[in-house]
Amino acid sequence: MSSRQVMINIEGLSKSFGKIQALDNLNLDIKKGELLGIIGPNGAGKTTAIRIACCILQPDQGDIRVDGYSIHHDPLKIKSIIGYLPEEPNLYERFKARDLLKYFAELYGVPTADINPRIDELLELVGMTHRAEDRINTFSKGLRQRMGIARALVHDPDVIIFDEPTMGLDPATSQKIRNFIHQLKGDKTMILCTHYMDEADQLCDRVALLDQGRIRDIGTPDYLKSKIHGDVILQIQVQDPQQSDQDAITALPSVEGLEVVGGKYHISLKSREEISPVIDVLGRRVISVNTKEPTLDDVFISTVED
Image (tube, helix red, strand yellow):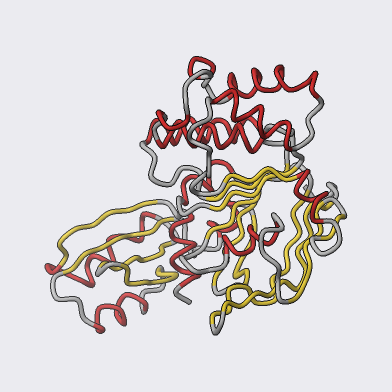
């Protein structure tokens, strides 16, 4: 990864909306061929950063360079090399699927001889060949997302940005969308904004955790999960939780961290052999006990709540 050239350089990016600071001196490099995930709470600045990168918004300060081109000086060039799938793709509903793709291909200046072969290729990629002559207004949300992906790819962009591509979709359709994204890995430079931590874990080369307009942490999914102390997370629900419980648990030498999440104790341990001493401390007030390996959800919770 380190040997790849930088495809997207975000430097000193700031943006406010009135008194709300959406981005605060954001700095980030994305390598060519990398799939970078961006996760964070609502209002963290994810969509603002994306819209600036796509030359839809102007920043108050800073710059984004895409393949060396600046958003301030080369917006048309940047738009020609970026494909963007917003959370709600704005598709012209009266168009048939094939006609919609043809319209955008012509808009982006795809050579006339290449348009029909490109459309056929994209319809096959997103599994929509059988609906090529159907109007967009007859499509479900999942089919519209597939068409949104095809539209974003119609000009064969070097960079693709996905903003919550599986939000609100059923599990089967969500997996199809993830499969499409996975097929593009390595060939394209991609940014994936998502609230689904398992999606980021499954797809991304690196994940950036954005909070209050700044990157709080960044690295591979495995690296971020390794920063959650311990190899096992013990989840314990107790009757009548007390501060003395937390004091007693954190005093145990085997305990590497404790958080209270949703009324449950989340306790990081070095190994499963250390579970019994924790339960002994809480005694008969224990209602339920579960164990799990660290996930990006744990990274998200521990970082955002710091």
